[in-house]
Image 1 (cartoon, rainbow, N blue to C red):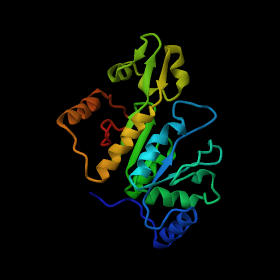
Image 2: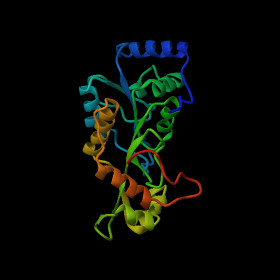
Image 3: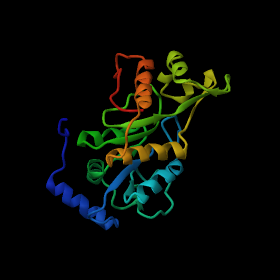
Image 4: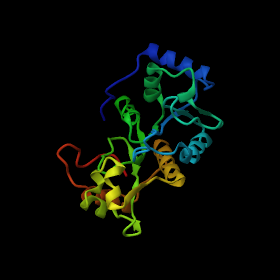
Length: 237
């Protein structure tokens, strides 16, 4: 119930809105920020921007715009209506990054720095392809993890198996190779479902069932406590 830690000044807001209009976004439009970590190393925290297309279409169909953030080292996006590849635009700057984090309706991200800025401005996040599952979700956020496929068992590990075997602490896929375990990215449908859940929540159209609340509690009970991490995250899985 507290106010955000940070707010934009009037001058920063005015300058940011002018920049958005130069990119073709109407002044009265709402938008969603998007950042999908993508590096040459292709480690467990990376994901494929192509798997977010369905979610982007859902945002556009609900009346919003999508601003894809990042830098020019990322793969360019194909042209889509009301989707701005800001990462490859001349408008990209440090101050504009902050404006987008602060003014988006919500932010869609992976486990990378940009996903942890919007909540300081009171903006909720959709956290996708989170790796490892030991990482908690900060408050106001909803998210889903990458799952763990075992070549030995020829199936996905349960959350309980991942926690008790400590593989959920492996921050690099190299640590999983000797165990013949590999992370499995979220599917386009899973990412889209999560974005739709956030849209419904912001529009006051979501009602969590008793079964969902039971599963939320059960997941938090499975998760071990660590001295350097939050034991019980207020974010929702």
